[in-house]
Length: 468
Length: 89
Image 1 (cartoon, rainbow over the protein chains, first blue to last red):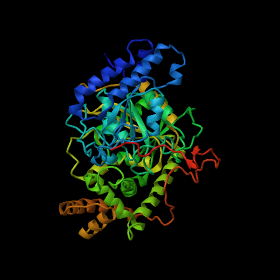
Image 2 (image 1 turned 180 degrees about the vertical axis):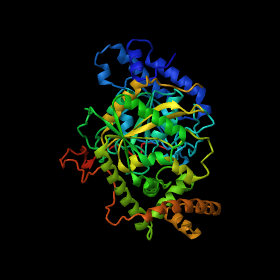
Image 3 (image 1 turned 90 degrees about the vertical axis):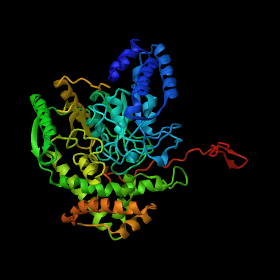
Image 4 (image 1 turned 120 degrees about the vertical axis):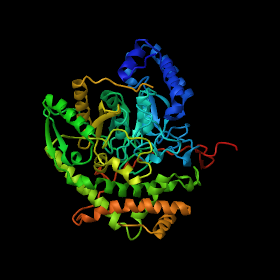
């Protein structure tokens, strides 16, 4: 069957009996069976659980209850979870050999909420081990391939999450973004994604990378799909005390102003990425949205600040993997994990703490203050997600610093704890996806969604998946 | 170029309880030196008037209500709890 590419089409199909939930699962699993060996997207496929859930859904649909969608807003929506999300009874590896046989005794809040909303989990997808990476090449279980061109990286660290969608093996997926790890792979795969405000979505049950930077989010084929998932996963859960319920600002101001950060367009992005964003700006301008150039001089330090604070927090969070209570021993860690643990230990060690870690935390304040000032003059910022479209497998993997610089446009959102919506737009000359991100002040997700929907309408956006 | 010495790498590996081979020590020394050199650019900024940011929510002291809740039920003067070791090997 022709798989629907949006939540609405999926639910319309189920309610109008065009197909059953079991038939949906049949089709998705058939695609996974056919293409997963080559693309290496799924690490664990939960066939039995998926069918069990699908049968329950078909049963509920039989009752013809008019409240069925309001009680189960994600009814029939297939989901692939990044293998950092704990799933009770289902192996969770963090794509690392350290946890290759680990089975959690509880599920992440996000996993539970999606399940209760009617979603059907198809399995756990590949990522860079411990979320350490920007290309998907740091998985201990082999790199995932980009379905648009298998010689190219899928982007990371949520490589499986983005490719599950671009290869049409799932309708939505979950991911985490510590410095672009949701936005970048989504951008390399022609998929919509959201890195929420830090404190909007609970991190409970998500394997921690850098606790002051980690953000839990999702990907979908349209802005509306990402918004619907956000509505289900956001909010207090009693476990993550950085999440407090707020009154969401859903009313969008009439005259929006979008800022173009000068520093982001000077040297960083290549010509294709830059010209594509200029086209996007023209699309928005036609609707009356005003653009202003803004200056953010501290952003040139963002990568240095990030690569001090993040490894420091990583070295702390990965200390629990002692190989005594669970998991394999510490020598099983891959190279990138070892590098980051050591870098973190170095910048926190006696004699270096003030010069590196404390100093980085202060520069982080400087970046935040600058951003607060910029948001007094504009409502949203537009920026590239990555300097180029997807690059070739093996191109950056032997040069850690070169790989780190891929994150140059992503770091700001994580350091300041602000949300970013990454939207696909056009393809490069080599046929690889392009796009951009829209960043707003903390808790401005609904303004970002509104802008995303305006853009989709103006460009007559249609979801696209790769031909395999 | 701010370099790491072999001793620096061994010291840090010890702090982090990582057993490294000689080859690893040499390779990581090279790679980490490049990274440390890059991140050292932060020393050019004057941060004397800035407070450090440890997290971005602005929240402090997030507590739940201090309510007395009923405890687990008891039997023979002991609290009854869920089994933790529940598989025979």
